[in-house]
Image 1 (tube, rainbow, N blue to C red):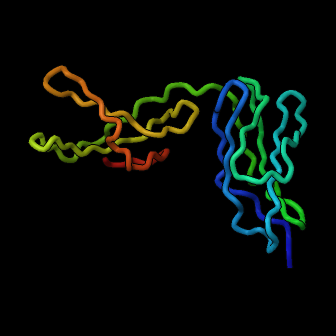
Image 2 (image 1 turned 90 degrees about the horizontal axis):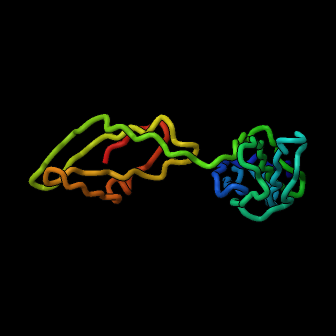
Image 3 (image 1 turned 135 degrees about the vertical axis):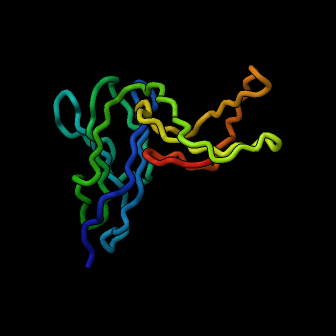
Length: 171
C-alpha cells in the first residue's frame, strides 16, 4: 500500500556567494511504494520566522538557493514528494549560518611512518583540522623541504585519500 515517502538523507549546504548557497541531498531509501514526483525546498526566513517554499516538486538532488543575506542563520528543509504526500521535515532540517568561509586550520602531521630519501618517499598520517573554516575541506597541499631551503609543493599527494572530518588518514 502506498504511503508518504521517507525524508531525503545526506543533506549538505555550502556557501556559494554572498547571496547564494548550494544544497544537495540523496533520495530517500523508501519512496513509500510510490514513485517520487520531486522535492519541496523550504527555508525559514530569519527575520519573520516564517517558512518560505522556494520550490515545489523540484526534480533534482542539487539546488542553488538564492536571495540569502550574509550573517543570517537559515533553517532549510527538503521534503520528498510522491502521489500520497510528502516526507516529514524533522529529520532533514539544517541550520545554516550564511557566511563566507574562513581559512581552515592547518592539519596536523600526527605520525611519520616511513621515510626513504633514496626513493623520495615519505609516509605520513594527517589529522583533519579541528576548524574547517565553515566549509568542507577538500584536500591538503603538502609542502616538502628539498635541497636545504628550496620549497616545492605537490598538490597531488593524498589526492586519492578521503578527506573526512574526525578521521586520521595516511598518504
